[in-house]
Image (tube, rainbow, N blue to C red; front, top):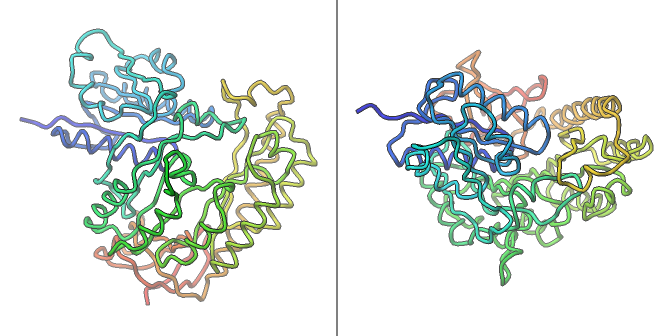
Length: 436
């Protein structure tokens, strides 16, 4: 009998990527074959994002693409857009099943069960705000050389602009035992690097009794045999205390790359955003990290056009970014999200001003990135070999521990291995080099 096929596509963050891998694994365990999203499939799963209006729009486009590719397929929509706007998703022709950010472990049963044999579409979106436990959704089959590992779910910050707490619910941490168990399974498969992901990663353990914390987890994972690299995904600045800095700086495996979302380099705007730190605290963090971890790459998110942001606020932010000399910037324009506090703020910034400010920061980000990369020309770096360049199969690319992409000649057998590479030249947003 021919196997049924499933195709999954993902928008948004590393957590979504992890969860898509887990969903694919659930289907494979039931005998499905995973195929490319652009191919004809029996089931399509669209894992959506709703951080910005653009995420919503791209989600709708991918849903419609699936229904065009195979009008007879079962189309499943999950993720944050499905959670916050199920009625919008249900109205899209061809959608059969909508599952939010809860009960993803039931997707295959819902697809194959009686629910889809009757009237469609089926709304299986559960109340996320009443979720109080971490949903175990292991992703042991991952089509990448870095193993993603989700350690927590939800966020209790409620920043004025952010829809995520409404899409993901309250903070829920995964047990230490479960994290370590999945880590060992990933290492047994040959992964050399594990990336810890979560919606509010730095808050790991704060919802449970006892002394569980991200620092404790990092200490435990640093002792795992076979782990060469441990990468921490985005950390909120208020969660990075001196103890955590000391732990990651002293670990032999933690990567020298930390993504600390700044959002604005102006204290007044940070207050309006309901962020839980000021620029002086952020400045101290970066200084301590740079001292404790030479060569560390500090990257950040910057928002332009938050309601009330005047030219002076933007200039303050611009100057602060230049002062801290980030390794990279992720710039995005404020996008009102229905249900958030900032959506009702009256002093909205015109789209044209957002565009101008965004372009300025993007250009600055490019200069900062090139400046950081260029300091590693004529240096030896350890690189995790990831994938071949499609235009030249003899060239491979990989990442240093501080998140610099290097392209170099290599053999296919080196994929997934860590090699020493000499950085020779800066090209665009990466280095070229050679194995030594």
